[in-house]
Length: 107
Image 1 (cartoon, rainbow, N blue to C red):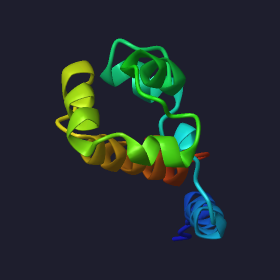
Image 2: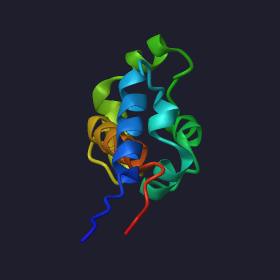
Image 3: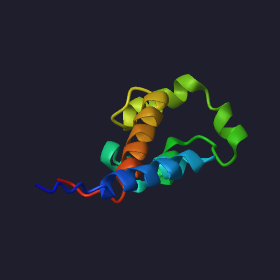
């Protein structure tokens, strides 16, 4: 009896891992694409969410200057999340899951 093993899924998974490992920088907009933001809020995308906040966010320094409590209150009120940290963690998890499953056949 001849046994054949399909290793294509394994090879794709190794490729996906290699691509993730090679990633040195991940932009917030990549972790939180429009599909993520619109699924967890009433906003179309991350830019729409930020604009609606009323805070200045054009530079990293401006964003860092937003009081954590105020920003977390905005996130809690306008998204499915209790905090900005939770939103980022879920977004990161979904991003990694999507990248790991990229090109994989579903069974």
